[in-house]
Image (cartoon, rainbow, N blue to C red; front, side, top):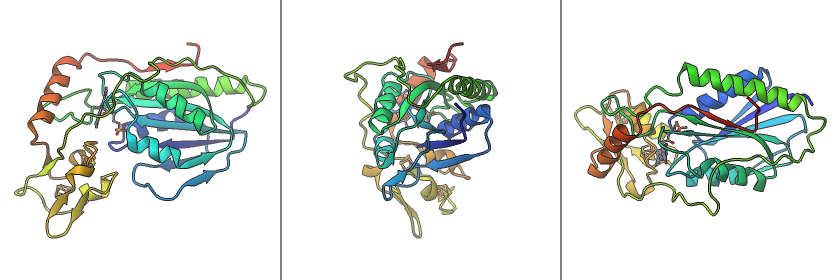
Length: 270
Ligand SMILES: Cc1cc2nc3c(=O)[nH]c(=O)nc-3n(C[C@H](O)[C@H](O)[C@H](O)COP(=O)(O)O)c2cc1C
Ligand code: SF4
Ligand code: SF4
């Protein structure tokens, strides 16, 4: 079977999941790629009519060992007809726990057929220059792994006679899920008034539109999903965490999760 089109579907507030998916697509080496970036939209449901020679590559970060609530909601608003799918998560070098298994279950519910999966490492959302946690990842080595994964996916699909396959993709994780999702914390990043130039970049990258810009920047803390996109994209380093629990978590991750992990691939013979 030949792949004629690839669709990248992702939720990726700080861009690491997106970079991994682009690497996989590059390895598949196909020109016809359509991107559905669900990070900034929670708009109307989209029905995607897939032809049998299309491949979906769907990706999400891991939050608390699970998929972020907003990623699930946005993926669920899309409607698919049957097609092959690759499932991918990016996690911050701690653990991905039940997240990839949850993504497998979700794509099956959406009508897709997962045939391979990958858990890649991305710079932790809570990492900073001073408190690094997998900083700079996915790096060149990770992207090469993603490209190699893409090339092997292509070979696997070429070897299939028809898209009507029964593939029981084995993915690690527990079901019922044991990881409990994102940390419960009522806090959001704050502004350093002396540095902020009220440029609005943070508002533009917030996936849940929690930030508004008038004469000054304000944040609806109760909406914040702590994705850290506003911090990582602020050109003046004016957006920071002051919450003591968040700082403690970042220090704990730095002290306990700094030993380099490598991406794991499932459903492809090495
Ligand atoms: C609220 C929250 C919870 C997270 N939980 C985990 C986790 O359980 N395990 C882990 O290794 N990384 C965790 N991370 C880190 C992200 O999974 C990681 O940084 C990922 O690469 C971000 O993807 P993105 O760049 O596509 O947004 C968490 C990040 C956030 C914001
Ligand atoms: S991105 Fe930074 S400088 Fe720009 S408005 Fe937001 S906090 Fe201020
Ligand atoms: S305000 Fe919260 S949800 Fe919005 S970008 Fe910042 S950390 Fe993410």
